[in-house]
Image (tube, rainbow, N blue to C red; front, side):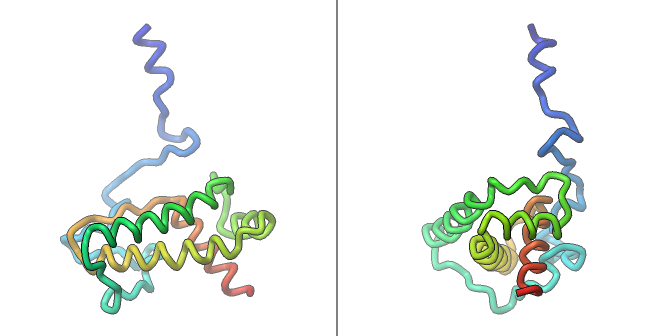
Length: 139
């Protein structure tokens, strides 16, 4: 029975499973060095908005989650940003993607300015941010 349960554990390489390594995080204690290798390279930390309290921070994160939910039906698995941009266009979700990207970047900038946590670089977010950039450049 125990062996049967272990077969259901996702393995590296399975759909949606990726390895989290030291490079998968922007380390707060290093002032987010390595940011230049990600979609966060142009993020403006200095003028980022800092929420007044945890309740406001929670509502900012909830806004991002709600927008992200509309994009979940887009299959980004093993797709290039160009392919994802086309899928977003085909699904009429361009405005949703661009708004999510704006809110996501605002939240990451606030999180970086706050400086008390590391930021996980999620491959799906990277792909969506790159797709948003492609869409904005071709608008």
